[in-house]
Length: 311
Image 1 (cartoon, rainbow, N blue to C red):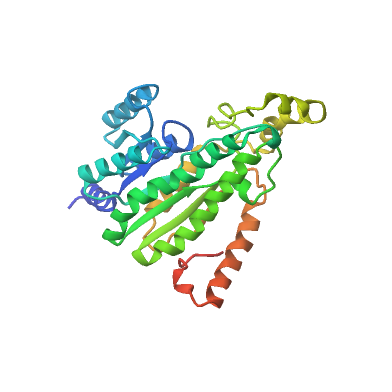
Image 2 (image 1 turned 45 degrees about the vertical axis):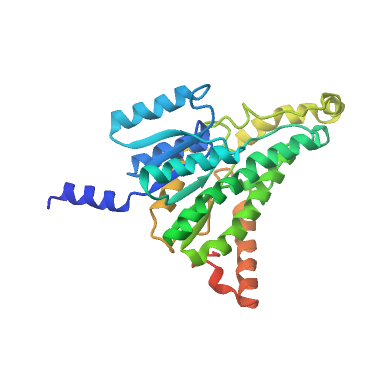
């Protein structure tokens, strides 16, 4: 067997079937492309694949044709359980299995916390947290039956780092997702399912987070903050950009996802930080994960911890 043939055989043997949520743009789209380039079969979940995201689906199809990879758009509205169920069922029918779920779908908002209505907070929680529950309920039965799998949760350094004001609803939702990921990790490990939380910092470019950020519905209350905080709020993205070191790009988040997917089962890190601005989230998470690990040992459930539960 030639060296090239051996490499191709190894790649095929290690190839996984992966679904990435929120993959029309940003981290999700980059991850889908990078995972496909690494030899995996990737379903890029997005809504309105025949409408406003049709161009993104076509781009992925062209990428596959041009580069001999397998990444395809699939209709998946993570706010609709029937849509999620249909997408996972399609993947199972076409591939016979599902190895990896990348929970990436999310949305950001920007403005004074008081000016957001409770309904807006509920919608943000739906997108950032409840979406993961819908996908898990559809995907985990496949993984549990197979006795193997991987859940990758794309979190945010804001959950434990030095997060700035005027992003409170988003930060609260991402913290909720992080808590869900920690609990799920213990509840699926006995089925051979790994959990990895990938924690990006604030990337000032390369995603649409700030450009597409939602605004408060209560414009009158938002305006009430202008005199005291208007300039600071308007400068927030720029201040974050000033902390960002030169030479770092958003692609490294996708590369981190590829790295954890390609590691052997049971040997993956529990949490991976990709934070060029160094907002301190990794320091706090190290302490928090160590405390959690120690507590699990104290109450006799240490077998629910992955091998690398803390650093």
